[in-house]
Image (cartoon, rainbow, N blue to C red; front, side, top):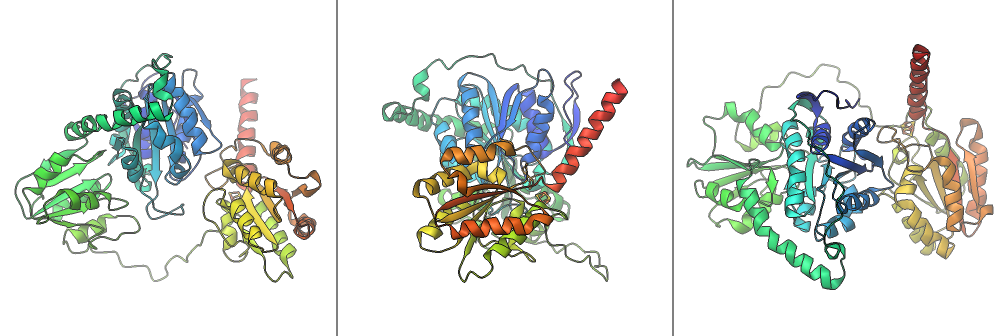
Length: 552
Ligand code: SF4
């Protein structure tokens, strides 16, 4: 459970996850507002903020329809001079890329910080993209904490940097840090900024004439960003004494290197990088003292690639791209150990009976099970059908025993892909999407389908929550989904709200079958609350009733 910050008596030590440390740092930096869309491994940061926002003087914090709307709301806060945090997972930044990239060109006023949590190893994601690439693309500062204390310190610093250079600042976490706890020393909080509308409205109008000037301004500030990076404490040249091999670490890789340090005959010349753009002078200073540079970074071989372009060809650069370390999956202390040429650590012998594998599956009693049973029944007898699905708990419908869906690409793609399959001539075409994903980015795809009266059936699995990330609130309640769909122009006679229930599988299947036979657009909303959400809700209600009785 997130630990709400104590606003009455400022605590100087907290036990925080990396996610929470960024949130606490932001709060202590004078945060006025925060926006997010749930996504592992970033969700806990925002839950911590929400807990804090409940206090009288806490920041305003709200879950949003998607990462793009979250980022745009943050821009509004910044424009009127206040400090704002946006939180998302790495793939969420694809959704928010448009406002994010353009926000580097406007003159950020109140500090705007983007916390983006990457998921190397894909514990709960569809790819391993590295958000440092986005920061580099936008030409803004990226801070990459190595531990929870740095996550807190960097969050505080990020707001100052954002206001100083008038750019958004990115904080990049990875799953291991986002989800692990350590002691964090906090500092006294700073007051929130007063409201102060940006003095020059032209600096927020990206018409070509002003955008050209603002783009030039962003380019002109780059040397200042580089000079900050050379001098900031997050980029430390720990030793530049000559040796044959030097090490550059970034983010959490520093901990993996230090963990193996006692087994090395002597510490290697070492540069740690926690702030980007890259500190080129420090990199060159290290490279001048060694023949080989070992690059230890989590995510893409971003640094390794850059080094190949800036260092003399005689310097051997070894890392992920050279084949020394794996290109995919999470970096680990054991990978680093191997790269350092150390023998493997002795391992405990495995127990004779290893724990049987437990593949992910829908919870017992999950409403999606009944919807999948109905869908499979409705599709019986068709020779060639397609079911395009989306991202959420229901993606588990791809696995046995259901095997009910055939695609899952990105948020909202179920509807666009189904329209494409129908346009290509396939019949029947079914799109399966959850209520939260539909509100996130399915609505726009449905508009295209409405405009063309596409021959497809959209099945919305409405469980009343964002189930996959732990039961956060959806931006609109279930009761507003049908009016929204009708408002978009779906024919009322082809829009149905039915129950997803073990005793109503045949009724749901019959409705789906009838709509598949209709050659036009249809929508079926299968409603039943997520069983986990229902459990949480009833226990919260019980607790509230108990508290009331005690008060009374
Ligand atoms: S969390 Fe809810 S929606 Fe997800 S599998 Fe469990 S019951 Fe189903």
